[in-house]
Amino acid sequence: MITPQLRGEPVMRTLSDQLYLDDLHVGQRFTSEAHTVDEAQIREFAVQFDPQPFHTDTQAAERTFFNGLAASGWHTAAITMRLNVESGPPIAGGIVGAGAELSWPTPTRPGDVLHVESEVLEITPSRSRPDRGTIVLVSRTINQRGDVVQILKARLIVPRRNRSAFSAATTSAARITPSAERVQ
Amino acid sequence: MITPQLRGEPVMRTLSDQLYLDDLHVGQRFTSEAHTVDEAQIREFAVQFDPQPFHTDTQAAERTFFNGLAASGWHTAAITMRLNVESGPPIAGGIVGAGAELSWPTPTRPGDVLHVESEVLEITPSRSRPDRGTIVLVSRTINQRGDVVQILKARLIVPRRNRSAFSAATTSAARITPSAERVQ
Image (cartoon, rainbow over all chains, first blue to last red; front, top):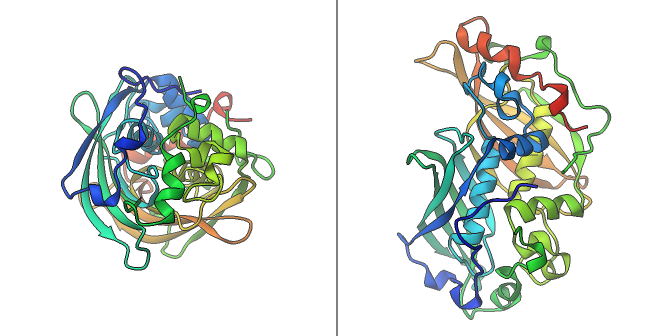
């Protein structure tokens, strides 16, 4: 099992932290905690989901496009999600994506210490569903040298405050991960 | 560890299968093998990378936006990658993405049997690097009911045949996953 080592204690969000569509503004920024990626994590993810030598085999990777072991882009995306869920924008109802654009300008390498810097780019209340809207959140995943390893523009579904069943039904559960489920 | 159950034996690609940029054409299609997603896989991925109740806790998930347990979109993306690496387009040098657009029209649910249907949308030789080019490949991940659970448009880097160091350096290693690394 891959256990992200977050700086300090995992963040336990409380209901009072939660941000509804009405609480967000364009330009609002969030910075996550950091996570150190090691070779074992890169290999373990790749063996499961992206079994190509440049992600699984340090020696073979030297002779590939990547010139050395690199994390799967989907691994970088998954680590980014973990960091955002635990220490990124505390969106009411959780982080629920409808779609995303991704690019990977630089590979993630063993030893990289990644954190995520996010910014709200757009806020769009739904015309047909008054209980919700969407935002576009850009999340840059950045290593210890300041290199951007991933740019993610995600379209997220966000409930409105006090508008209806959406928020009532989701927020009571969505940001509270039962302790038994948490990775320690 | 999550062990995808592919239909039949895992596909071992050989060098003669490999497709270079010169071998591809717009409209070319590829269909992967299938993978069955179960609740344990959904929970295991989510605990590591997307620890939100609608992905980790069947009971709590009933009271959320998803109305029941759903796989993380990043899990669907990772499964899609695995299926494409093992039984999708056999691109020389492997499947190397520079960027992607994703949407998740329908959640992936426990019991879903997913396969991937891909099509080449664009082919663009590099102007500055005669040894390579990019393609846009759309991959639709489809469940047993025919619902599309993910649409991925990926920009992939593809070597040209007999053009230079890129292909020589990468193809000897890239599609051959050492047997010790393979998930059995």
